[in-house]
Length: 486
Ligand code: TXE
Image (cartoon, rainbow, N blue to C red; front, side):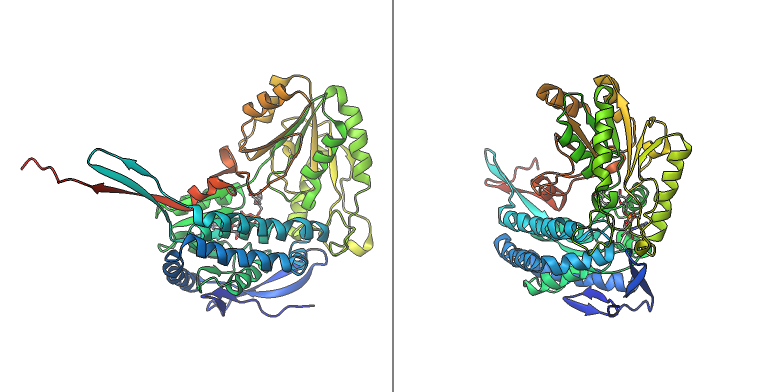
């Protein structure tokens, strides 16, 4: 079933791009084209930014409470259409339906609801002086650009637009070109909820469209989710107009399992931290450090449970492991698997493509566990962004902390132990922005999410993010006379 041409969403409705260029989006599970999508050229980006500017003037004039009401109506629509939107997300991403229904749409709705509730609370401060006083205003930035990655298209669109809009900004959002569909549905929902025209716009396209947005003088802030290399390009490009940037980038996060850990929970976390969404999760704990005392038992239980995971048609509610995003990404993941074998790491399960002929046209790979890995291996040092786990052993706390921190990445980390002092001591030493004790990859909206080191700048979610979508204006109010020496 091919969808109609997908247009841009600008000024409260669908508009044709003037670029005359289109691109295809493909269903990763079948390799079949789902839709043709219009590519936004520089003129289209300019039009979208202009529309966002006009929308901003209307939206910023509304009270926080009024903005919150509009956003809450959008929350209800997102939740009502959870299954429909989840199915669209599965079509475009190849992830299992059970995940999309349980997480993708609802976590997006949670973000919109959270910031809808905060919209009326955004405030300044006052400072009393002898003959004057100061107040501050926490004001919106203006037109914000959101640039998404392909692993959680709708969630990322909500994680960026919700705080931006709640703070009174408008947004031009560019989804990843591999997953262009669900952001358009979000734009429809925002409009249906009463969002003024132009406050949320969607432009489609590849890095060229992203570059045009980042360079545009009418854009005050850029929030990117993507690879580290893209983050560096965006930051460099944004520097020309000193834009405010938030960067949510890649990771190669450690999961440390001490010998006193609850082993079943630790195995559950290792599975979730490596095979959820076919391993295409930036915060995944892909370097699993297991204390040598429990290594063999851990591997036995891990292999047993991995062998029961169902790889298959993502639309089948029983499926645990869907398809990778593209043929190109499948090739990249398979090349890492070959590199791991060549480096002498031991494949204890997986290591290839599923043999089921019904999956041959899709971009499927088996959940793969490498054991006996060493810190210098390519599969241990580089982000694979696929279902490939590297297991390493350790004996000593200081040693494992040093090895865990031996990376340019710093997105996330996890620690499993029953020793509460050790847990907090180790977490304090880990160079990562988002960490877990005795769980992994749980991201409630109340929790700041983001990286240390080259995994990013700024945070998403939580109260903290209000600071990334507002600016502080100081107002000095003179209560007396102006003193002047002349
Ligand atoms: O990223 P890309 P992908 C990371 C994840 C992995 C990557 C996968 O770790 O590394 O994202 O996503 C646009 N100027 N995260 O392959 O290629 C591009 O069109 C402006 C981290 O999509 O970097 C796309 O829309 N824009 C994360 C977007 O950037 C440019 C969560 C990302 O593309 C551009 C999810 C340019 N020069 C994935 N080049 C987290 N930390 O939260 C490309 N783009």
